[in-house]
Image 1 (cartoon, rainbow, N blue to C red):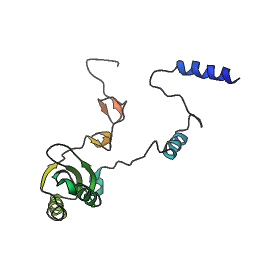
Image 2 (cartoon, one colour):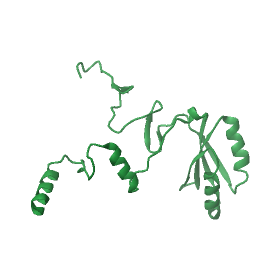
Image 3 (cartoon, rainbow, N blue to C red):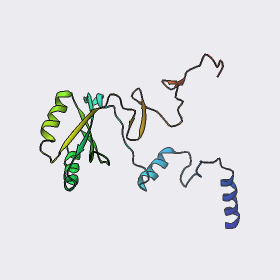
Length: 169
């Protein structure tokens, strides 16, 4: 009986389309069960992506910081603890750290640069204002909405646009 089941499993998995995973234990059609299982095993980490303008953050800036090598852990940890700083990463190249900052207006960004950074051993800073985010937390954005991986590029509110050169498609 076990050998027959193993043979059936191999045969059924051989007929799958490439890239498709075999369904695991649990109720196969229940997305909630799968989400809970992935969260429980640490395989998935849900994130909420919100347009920062809805929270009152009008300015999005990337700060490219030059820091003495011995101060990297201190500066990175201190920046990550500051409100408005939504990401800190060590970089390679002419700068050492990248800090992504949201602020309510340009004056608030200036205050952050002249006070919070002044307290830290930062030797140079290059500020880049982000005009429009194309990707946040690994998710592609289009007009402030998340674009799913299989979504067609020429979409308007989830519906496909018709191309005049291709009637009926």
